[in-house]
Length: 596
Image 1 (tube, rainbow, N blue to C red):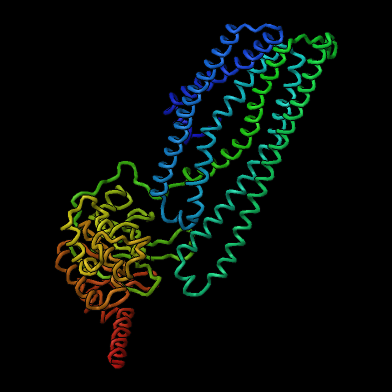
Image 2: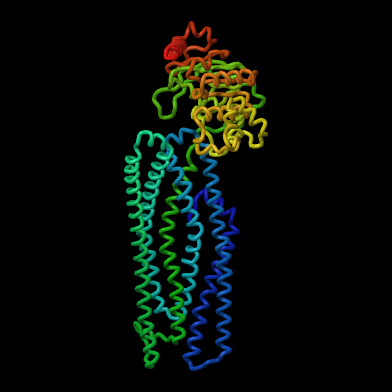
């Protein structure tokens, strides 16, 4: 039986299903052994020259009863055992999904999405298969096998020795091959991970591939990865088939040997000679011989199950280790014990001498950054690419851990705060403007599934995207497609902005979220922020000075540190970076004006 901390609790939870299933399976195993016994009695009755219809009818009734019990028992164990295995798979999958949501972004930087998806698919399916049909094979291999052997020994122990031979050989063969099978299965899964990774990356970047006319080269690259995956699969199948073939040969050899003995017994019975093997006289009637051969025929399935169980167990154990490793992955970002739950947040934010570097990176993203945002202020953040603007967003939402005593919300150290309550008070418009594959209305109402149509439309008007949405054939019921593929870049930005606005959080952060809209639309959005977000803290990260030039104050980042934090008028005097950005923007305006 496959055990582990993520499986044992489900065994305890669904013990009644396993118990009923095993009882039904044992009943089927026990009852089916009457079949060769009744057939043997019928043969002896007929070979004795008797033709009593009552006796024959009685045997037929007994066989029908056996068939009925087997039918009912098989229905019951199929329902209970397969039901239990599927429930366990669903439970583990649910745990994995929750785990995936709790893991920090750094985990997904280090682990490819394709690998994770293969754990959720093939590995869980392998576990479900073993917990279902594997349980059946395990019970049959041991219980049914023992029952048959006991009955065979009672009939004739010498003949039974020949039946023990394949079982012993299969056990030895399984022990020798099991580790090798597990290794081959692990290789197969890793190659499947690579195939999944490659396919997922190509689907995500399909526009780039088409734009650079690289379809043919990517097809060739995929063919190489697919061939490696195929070769690994073929290698595994070869080992598996060879393993099964050896088992089949062992069983076939014993069957042939017993049939040979059976022929000898028939000849001896007709000629009236005694059958002796190694000095042991075998005294079986034709009917008893039929019964003995029927028992051995029944024993073939436990022998096959024993061999199949070795292969299935090796695969399930390897897959469980992969799933277990994922569930055991360290959750770097967690709420502390006795965490502070933020309530009635005003929106005051303070960074104190914060130095932060991403895990695995040698260069810090932020160095000794200190500033304070008063509640209700509208703040701009500017700086060249890679200067740590988006890092402020990640840290304020505590996507990563920060040194204690460096980041505060309303005077509360975020490292002491409950993560859920912290993030619930912050609305973020991310830089990548990710949209879910649902309708426009559902994307806007993501924070509140019960949001009214009026509030959704108000949010869209705030983001100046209402007119665009109503121009669509299906309006707010327009399906955005995967990652919002049916919308333009500017429309995705504004739908993301509407989604954040609907949340009505005391703190809202726009991470370069108006870069894809025209100047007029940008002015409308900024005007709406000033009017509708009055009294609430809003941080606007921008690459254009025009976006933030009317903010209360502007934070200027340079070389991972804070260059200045002051009013736009004051920055024009003291900040070289801000001065340069203003100059470049004026120069760009002059160039456009000259071209006009």
